[in-house]
Length: 507
Image (cartoon, rainbow, N blue to C red; front, side):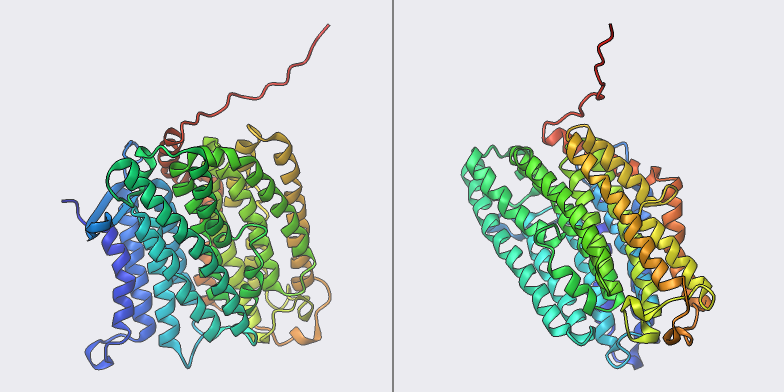
């Protein structure tokens, strides 16, 4: 039996959560140290798995851990690692300790509760990215709503209760539709295979559904994933939630958990419902392109920094969805790279702005101005995060965005051309935001702003370093994702189109 690395990765933050409630006379660490050390140990385990992951293997999953859970229904506790899930658990393991260090000021009176929910967010994200049983995936998919609900509702802004309620209602609506589709899929599998199973591998490789059944089941799962992402038009919960949530909570939500939606599309929708995925792809590409442009335009009109970041993310998720449904290797790999780049840049934006917002207890853009002289370090880090967000060459976002547009153009030329206008709009909304907050005339209300200290700078520096590193050397992420994408292309019976060559008649 292989060493259960994946089980350790999932259990470590859960063990850390339990240790928070052990009486201090039995444990020589503070609550903050327990949470931080458990997240760092999780990161070490993920790095070990990443180093021994075999990128040349043709196996669908590696490091599998499987135990019977509810055998009568064919349900197992099955964890398995693919290239895509490795990339995303790596992102989760990197961002969690950074959030814990960067949000030291949050929840001072309820620190233990805050740390508990953060660790549970990490555990649920790791479990959902590793789940290879669809029932297990659904359980964790729904369970992850709980820690975010309390993080927003207990630690958010003045309208936190309304934002938390809206978040949970949208999440439950998607989950309810997904549950109905899950039950239907179970009976379809039981009829065709002669046994009930929720194995993602078995459902991907052995089912042969009729056209209408596959269409409806696809729509049920897609609805849940599109709301989670979030994708236009099911995006409206995100700006309200991000505005009221703390920067650390928003980082965990947008930087990590929202990737569950796009991960589900790539790892579940396409392999299990390949025909319906190809059939609905043009409509989904159209919605994604509209979301790219619409969210970028709305981002320009925002007065609140955190709402601006939320709409920027909605625009970026449009690009990610485009790459997934391009049905090209370069587009799908680009979406995976884009998810990592988006997680890093979003974290840098929210956490850097969080240090600024903390000092003013205000996130309105017009409350700031002229911070370049009085906060040069904060200005520099925010500028790098902003440039990464608009996919400047040399930043990780450029690699993912270029691959997505290149891959999508191979099948959908006109939508891709329209989507490229989103790049121009991104430069406008982000640089305009930077100009209003950091340059220009110094605002009277910002004279007492203090620059980042050494500790805060060190906390944010990994985000900057990784963004630049993957911008110049994205090969590790691409190579890890490539094996999983090759398997996905094989499962859905799709091959990459040949190069598009313009035919010019010459006389």
